[in-house]
Structure formats: C-alpha cells, structure tokens
Length: 399
Image: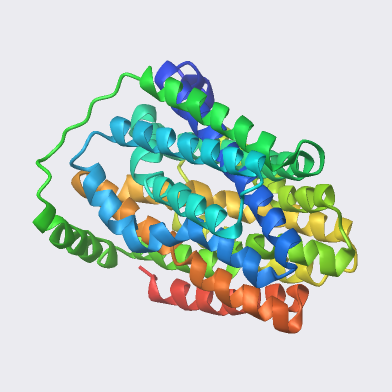
C-alpha cells in the first residue's frame, strides 16, 4: 500500500497546524514591521545607511546570542520560550504604536524595538522550527520544513506588500496596532499546543562548553559544515539586499512605497512556488547538493535583478531567485534535523542562528556601498562576492 502524501498527513495534525499558523502570523507581522520601519527611517533621513542601521538591529542578537539560545532551548521548555517571545514582540509593537500616535517616534525607538524583535527571532530555529520538525516525525522532516518555509515565503511576500500599503494608507500607528494583535493571536495558538520534551538541567557555567561541543560535532560532519558555511554566505552577501530596498526602489526606478512592497514580495513569491513543490514531493528527501545549488542560483539571479532596467523585470528576476531560496530555507533546518545527533540539534540550530546573525555585517557594508556607488551596483557586486565564497564552501564541504 503506498505511503500517504506527506502534506496530507501533516495537515491532519492539529499540533502541526497550530505551530504552522503561529509561525505564519508572527513572520508576516515581522516583515510588515521591517518594511514600515525602513520606510519611516528613509523618509526621515533619505539615507540607505540609516535604513540599514534600523534593520540591522533585528539580526544583531542572532550574532551575539544565537549559539547560546540553542543550548538554552535544550534545557528550558521550548514551548514556554516561544510564548515568552511572542508576548515580548506584542508589547514592543504596542509601544511603537503609542509613540507614533503621540508624535514621539524616533529612529532610536525603532532600533530598540528591532533589537527586541531580533532577540525573539533568535529562538525561532531552536524552538518553533524544531517543534515543527518533531511534530512531523523523522520520515516527513523535509516536507514539514518545506511547507513551513512556504508560509515564511508567503509572509515575506504579503508582509512587505501590506507594509507598503499600511504606510501609505493607515500610517505607522495602525500598522503596529495590527501587528500587536496578530502577535497575541499567535501566542494563543502556541498556548493550546500539547508539547513535551526531554530536558537536562540548565547549568549556566557549562553553556559555552556545550556550544563548543556542538561546533566540534558540526565541523566534523560535511553536511553540517555546509549548513553553517552556506548560511554565512547567504545572510552576508545575499539577503542583505532587503535592507536597502527602499533606497534601491527609489533611486533605480523612482518607485512608490507600494511598488517597493511589490518588489520586496517578488522573491518570496518564487520561494512559495518552489517550497510547495518540495513539500508535495515524494521519495528520498533532498540534501546537501540541492541546498548548495539553490543558494548559488539565488545569488546569480540577484546580480541580474540589481542591474535590471525596469522595476518589473527586477521583480520577475527576484521571483525566479526565490526558487533557490526555498531550497536554502527548507534544507537549512532539514539537514540539521536529519544529520545531527538528537541531543545536539538545538545547539547546532543555535549555531545556525549565529550564522544568520552575521547578516548585520553585510547590511552595514551594503548600506555604506549603496550611499557611495548606488544601490544597484552595490547589490550586484555583493552578490558576485557571495558566489565566490559559496564556491569555497562547496569545496570545503566535499564528502
């Protein structure tokens, strides 16, 4: 008798659906916040570097705390950690809405709120994403993560579009009020999930030793080395383009806020289509080769999109690049869940989060380059550098 379709089994599981729905709500509002705060910063300063500083705050905690968050998530209850983070982001959104309503909102408020949101985001892989994979079971890890990332792609597509629409129509205050409400709904969804985990005693003085042990495990395994290396390259040289989209759209095409939102939604649309294909796919689960090829394809297309003569051609190219980012996002977690020892998975996901957190380095450099040579050439040059370093990673992670 043939195995049932993986996606059908997943969608019949209430725990999976609640975790999936909570992720969708949280991620969509995170992208709304990022675009609204970026547009507000650019309107105040007309500087791509200022925008990159505001958006950098969301990734900074990943760099500083990512590895430790994985070790903590193996000792403390992951469900409780996830709920605490959702409550904190809701409070931050409420604070920004109040400041905007009173006319007191400034850049440092957005930076601080981004820092809080980034601290919560730091736990995403080690808490909610791991819970999703565990709920799915070992035979359906890649389809489960692929389907979860299609939701992430959908939110990255809808979130910026809503962000641009909200900014032009209802303003900053209402946008953050809506965000806070949806964060609270996500909190309620997670609250109703029945979840248990084996835990060990949290010993703060041993956290760094446990992180070092996880790093040794990862570096000794070619597939896990690839996850860490490719994540570094993609977040420094690839995804950093999002931080200067307001400046890129304005200077390259004279785009409105809504058009910039559409441009930001293009790559996630491609990722959504490709992610659904991975989620519906039967047979052996994809691995390291698809992970590397998908990442390289995105960087190559990003070069072309940055130099495109029209906004609509740039959007089309970014949509094609999304086919590669879907493979990257699905297998980034999937490979760790399939290849890493059970007792070290959260810690290695924490190390992956630290690699994601190197994104601010790329954001700062790209923002400065964009102010100097223009956003199109800055994005294209950065993506070419990314391809070079990705080739080095592929060579260093051969079996």
